[in-house]
Image 1: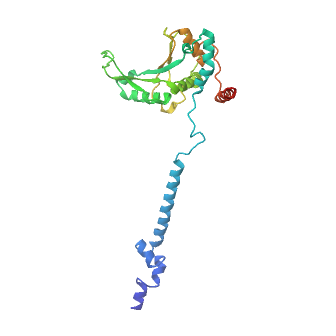
Image 2 (image 1 turned 90 degrees about the horizontal axis):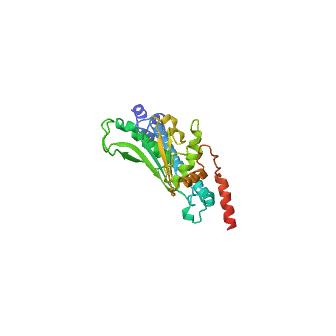
Image 3 (image 1 turned 120 degrees about the horizontal axis):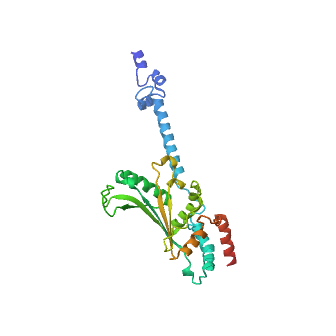
Length: 274
């Protein structure tokens, strides 16, 4: 009877050898060998929770030096206000500051004929326009039905974006400094695309000239029409405005737009003089 008591269970000497740390360890692991894995598993779970917490802390937004400062104005707008306005007033002899031509808005229009049979093609164009302009495009619908084209009235066949304010200046800056130099065999923009009311229109054959478009994600190549609406009704003043802003017209020498660090130096000097 003594041998049976020593081999079996609750208080025998052999139980600690098989069960790790005795009866408590065996109870936690449902057996003699289950105590140690239970303790290791608990430590691993704590480590996993600690790692997840560390990852959440690293993904949290961190404050930066300019967090409380106002958003700076676009550099092309500063260049227009400090340099271009004075040149235009002197060139055309304008004494009233309200007569100096300015840029009112930029309209980007993209027609998608393939959307008649493939509506998904329009979704791709809308996404790409949103990446290029930083603004959600508006889907345009057909005004009337055309049987030869299989077009029905009210069917979505295009997208349009109207840019004003800071987004307009930022888009124009990127178009002049980044997008147009990437056009293959680019020889300058034509000067015959003014409408007689001070507005200028140009066409883009490929959307891939914009740096925001990823070549690997492009499903189909499409173009777009870009219209620059100015505050003047005279083509010569609109032409002078766009040329001074840096539009690379054919046969003209592109004026240099100062870099942001140069603009900061000019603003500092202006503030000191005042």
